[in-house]
Length: 64
Figure 1: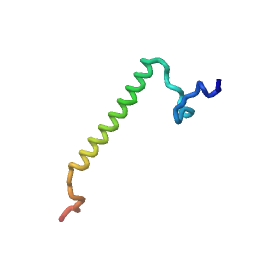
Figure 2: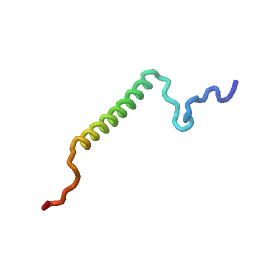
Figure 3: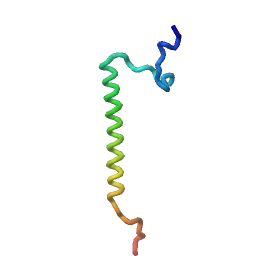
Figure 4: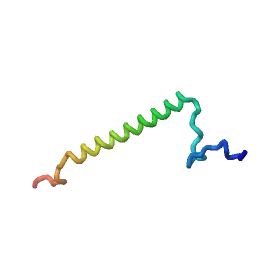
């Protein structure tokens, strides 16, 4: 049997430690990661909506 048989087949498996084999721990980790991704995505959408909805037409100096 090859010595690589027990290694991760993941592309960058050598960079990150192997995930937990415990089903509940793995599920908590995935839910935490997906929660962070949702917060980032929604924050970007709200920021984009705020930026693009304020159609100010640029900066005008005082007195004009």
